Image (tube, rainbow, N blue to C red):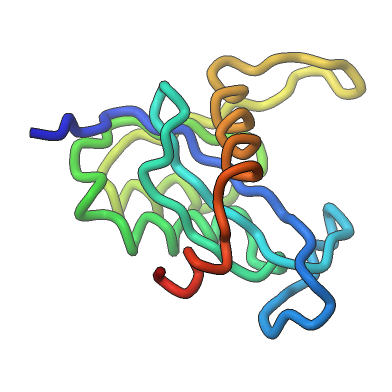
Length: 143
């Protein structure tokens, strides 16, 4: 029997895609025209759900789409760790309604300094793994 994840770390990453791509958007914050990858990983960095959107989709909206699509697979989740990009008036409440869990926002206290945020590096490492190993076109097409 597969163990259920009770803690997940969520993040999104905007990346360029080809000029001829049919679906792409512009992430004004990152100044990237392309797609955005939304992932939820466990404490080992293994992805449990991935959602690909156009880059103009906000982190919060992408997380909502991702959680709504995967809520049956994430029923044991009790805590979700996100960064400051997920702050919003109703973001924690919306995610709580979908998964019925606690959302913790970890944010940087000091600007212009390098600081490793607790457990946030795990999801960044997962993005690096995915960059090297996954064809996102196949994921987006459901292959």
